[in-house]
Image 1: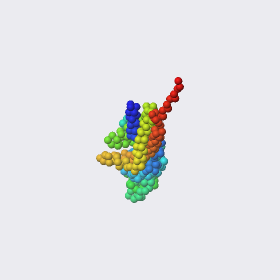
Image 2 (image 1 turned 135 degrees about the horizontal axis):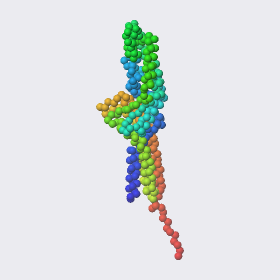
Image 3 (image 1 turned 90 degrees about the horizontal axis):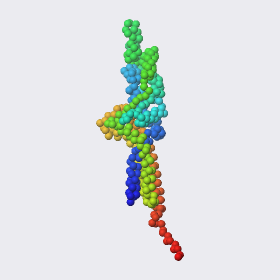
Image 4 (image 1 turned 90 degrees about the vertical axis):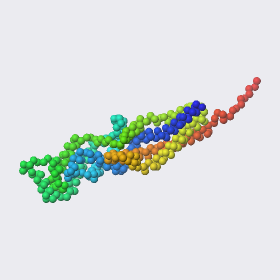
Length: 365
């Protein structure tokens, strides 16, 4: 009786943990594996989602904002053109994998209860600055030709020193330029000044962009601790074969009962895993997680930067969910098959009472 009770408790524990805790821990572990992310990412989708996110971060850069209010001021369409001429889909996909690695490394080694990641710009910054000069030239050439009055104003800035007026700095000259296309000689002087400015800025610029998403009301803590669970939860996976082994050991004296006690948890957990993850596999691609998170807290207004990065995160989360659901559904099918084999063994195994008894041969006196 005691063995039967212990077996029942262990079988119940196997089912409960197998259909609740195990899928969560396994998902959180899978989403941190670089090879899984590489399988999930579609370069075209990552490119379409990544460019707007990077534009938001570029708008914060001093190099970009330094020329606001001048003839060379950049808007979002300009930044979009800059990024699309600088990087291909492969480049953006590679950068997305670098960001994923940065997140995983921060969870492992970063300060507790924080969530952030870094985007290295060492290789990309020279390319951006080279194309940035071309973009500035393109913007200037797209302006209408300066009128006579505007041309005279430009000429005065060049000769005012002859009349005792202090010559303005290159910065002041750039800011006083009219929003028109100046003569070729002035254009070359302007572009030379801009190139020097960018080179100087590159010398003092950071090697990476540090992003700290704010999910509101402790959301970043939830993300951080969830990922930590995925990293530390690997010890949890051997629990399931251990539970089955204990059931088998304590019930082995009665093999028929042993097979029955093993078949029940295998069939129940396998069926639940199969149905649950087949449903997830079917419905996950159509879910709009971004809209769902906004409905959960309509009063919260996330920053544009967080909004753009969340769209990328949710795309990855959905992709990994589909991949994991497929694997867990196959695991459920395997458990069902193992359970059916165990049922078959249970039916073919005879109990000790069913073994025919042979009368002893009488021994003559």
